Length: 82
Image (cartoon, rainbow, N blue to C red; front, side):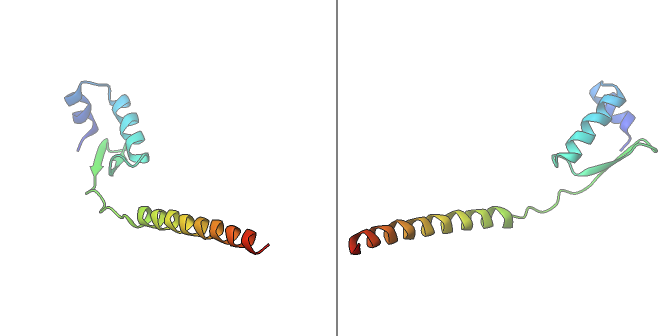
């Protein structure tokens, strides 16, 4: 897709469109690349979502809860026998 066409379509200067697209690509909000030498925007298919990181964080939080609860029980038991 030509950057000049995108800029004309949304009625903004090409430089501003390039800057905004660059920010969107770097932030991961848009999947593509800019070929400024040719004045093109190359659009990629959105990568498939991978929930591994989110699930891993949830598992670690639950493990933290379990370990915390075991610590409380161990402290209570230690006070009982002291």
